[in-house]
Image (tube, protein in one colour):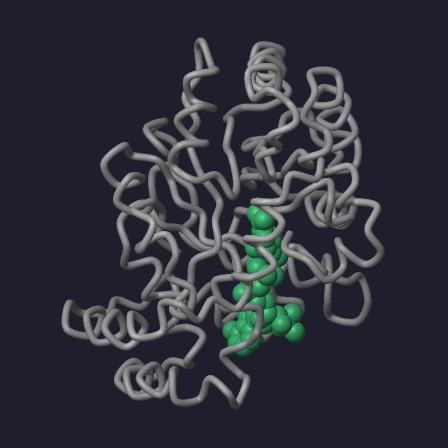
Length: 305
Ligand SMILES: NC(=O)c1ccc[n+]([C@@H]2O[C@H](COP(=O)([O-])OP(=O)(O)OC[C@H]3O[C@@H](n4cnc5c(N)ncnc54)[C@H](OP(=O)(O)O)[C@@H]3O)[C@@H](O)[C@H]2O)c1
């Protein structure tokens, strides 16, 4: 496993963490998969109160040491009191005393970010969380959130980024994170399984070619390409043990400059082909408060998490 500094904190985190959205508890899934990842050195797990998987993470954490635990407060829980309550609930579900990285899951324009960040700073002061992060924030939203903090820096922004979804590059967010030493946590780094989709076969042919050189799978090359970017770490989700093993091993693949460029060029041609794009943008730009989104049938099952 390789490590990168979290923001400017001096703390090192594994470059491959484990996502837990839709992680089940049956068969090989859930705690067994997470345990295997921890054993192999991916001691970094990402969850959210919205996923309903914090209790599974809590189970997997039993008997483990030094796992970096990241979770998120939901966008409809961003008032001062709700943030405090959500954090306390998450600590209980996770069975831990301190959350390493507490992230605002999505911005919510109907609640002033100052109020949210005041609660986040209280949680840091009380030792309930160690670092503050955000997710799905654009540069302007990030800067507004940072300006709302008095004594802490936001250490990370978790956004969708993969070989097929290149928005952080086109929006300037990746460069912004590099210049300001903010960790970019790439979510859906395996395009939610779409690399296996026949429709994308042409897009990912290049991954297979490069994979042959490294005795690696398409998914491993897709992950190692992300990790070749400064400030970027990734949180693939895998319920299958063999996938966990592959993903962890991808951290040790070193692509050369030519390979990185070849993948970059191919992916750039598909920059408008965002798998999550349309839904993501509707949710973010909509003026509906998040509490209403939450009530829409099936939203959290189908929508972006
Ligand atoms: N902050 C946000 O708003 C947000 C949004 C979305 C996701 N996330 C986070 O990011 C994590 C990952 O994103 P995601 O779950 O959307 O999708 P993802 O990690 O891009 O893809 C997950 C899919 O890829 C498959 N897979 C995993 N490893 C593989 C491998 N080595 N080879 C082939 N297939 C493989 C998994 O199968 P199996 O499960 O069968 O192994 C699953 O079907 C989430 O779990 C969550 O923690 C955050």
